[in-house]
Image 1 (cartoon, rainbow, N blue to C red):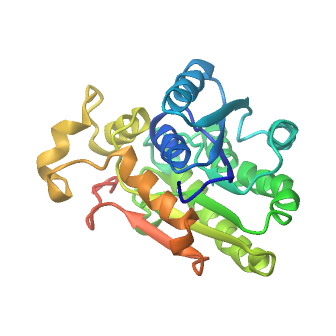
Image 2 (image 1 turned 120 degrees about the vertical axis):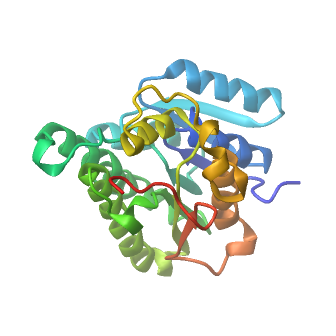
Image 3 (image 1 turned 135 degrees about the vertical axis):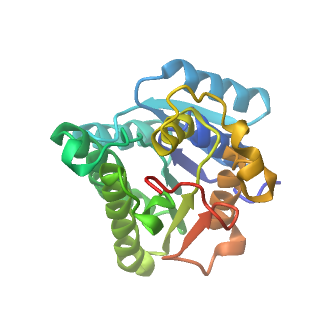
Length: 262
């Protein structure tokens, strides 16, 4: 018996990195997982196979977070396969290029804010009517410690994640009467492909390809792992957090290294 038995969870960006860890953990606790991907269908299928091989249930669904019509289509696709959506993990995201505001092109800014905030707004708008009928709903936004530091050379990412958190905290107030809990998990630097790109922007070391080289300087002697983030997400969705909404957990070992320009 898992703590999420019988629940259906949509995980955006659920085929790789943090999203894969979340998908696999939620499935191991009994949830049926709808794995969303933008372009990497192979990764989504690999994650699906891992869940099925472990005895879990999972489906895959394409859709780009930064395109409103695709968010609506994604929800319709999930609801055409499953009876509803009980849990939504808004994890899909992209890294910024690590440039100053003066050197940042409009296209990058628009894409990051759309991916991290505007698209999730439309996704929530599409899925909430179904979630309101499910008895209990959980929406968890995967933000970043970047919103705590607002460091230099990361304005598009900082702005996108800050807008995401504004969305989450507003939604928590609006949907509490409907028994929907909305919370935020804010990772520090995590060992994923995207984490490598962020580390390159932070350190200026374009040749960096292994975050474990940063273990010695990291809290507790290791860089944060995707499973650390997944565990926080699981807690928010579990019965143990049934009286929790509008909260933000920063998962960075108590001393994040995600400080651009310092």
